[in-house]
Length: 316
Image (cartoon, rainbow, N blue to C red):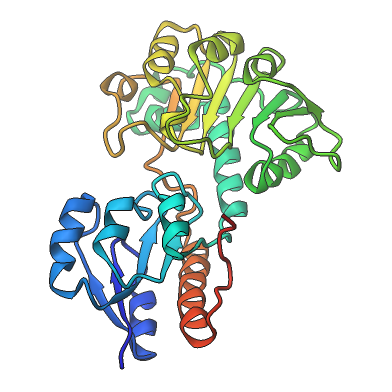
């Protein structure tokens, strides 16, 4: 008997094609919708769905778990878990897997945002295209070399970023609830203390849903008018209104932002600022990374239904 899967997030076409070749029935629902719409679309096959293919931003909410009585596994195309109800999944015995293969690409993106913000690369591109160079040179940027780099969250992404920063001749420090005994970086107890000792602050932490922002107004103010803030984590981990205000007033030097509090909505005031580099949540969006994540999703589904175990399960 064929195994039915529900795909509630966009993925590379080869993922669904490969699973169908292997005999799975994949029901694709409208991506980017609410759990209520997913439930309505899946209602005709709710008693047949044994697996869900999801993304980090879609996750596996409690309501979808309750709507799919035969659900056994959710394979997430990413690593974010803040929209997944792990307690409800554990209570039902549902296996949740992630695709932990994106860390290097995200670290690369964090570095690119920081460099672009410091050297005003996006502004420079606009300057040249608009013909302003003919009228004179644009203003000076800020050196990235030899700075004090602070990393909030020294997990796999933060660690990959730190290794890259080691080549830039500066000082690396971090803030993480768990001390890292095997690194030579200074550890600060709070994001505020780290920000006060940093020129460029990177947010790489996962955070806890409902736990409030990690990067508050006070943290951003501690960076100061020459400081640079980079976020490749989640927008809701930052006091976004304060971030916009400080950037607009010059009390924060610059920012490189890949994520926002209410994606895909971006605060209107940010769009007019030259001291911020904006990206549409694309830190892991490379051809190679998408391929690796898709292959991980396929491997988890195939291995689970063939042998009763997943390749990269989440530990509850």
